[in-house]
Length: 200
Image (cartoon, rainbow, N blue to C red; front, side, top):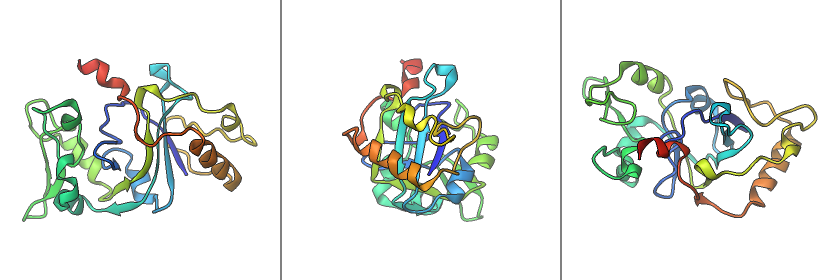
């Protein structure tokens, strides 16, 4: 299980739309390490007064490279369209390699406003050429509930991370947390991204 703080919740990283939750940008260390079957937990940020709240939880069910993601027709709808709806604008299928093996970045949330590629984001996102996908997920966005206090101090372990991510949890804690998630009733896209209020 990997846990981290979702500092910017626009529905971009993760992208919970079209029936598949994808982590294709940011968090290169998690994308490099997580395996099929692992859980990824995103929690709210202290700056947004949401520390200790759930943002999303996903069990990794598939992985692929950026080019595989870009070329898979299942995910054409996840290519960003900044002139479309908010859901389309914050899609995350925006990296691929050209014929010269150079990274290309589609006009997206991670490029500059005028469509010019953002070299910093390209370097950070593509340092791990791996996309994590899940069809077993729940995304609450800004409406996630408070995490049970049981998991804020479980034999000295806190499920909520700080600046980086956490991944060293006792097996019993993981099993209990997954069981608690299952008790919440609800799957897929359940709530609007918290930061969409900034784009209204």
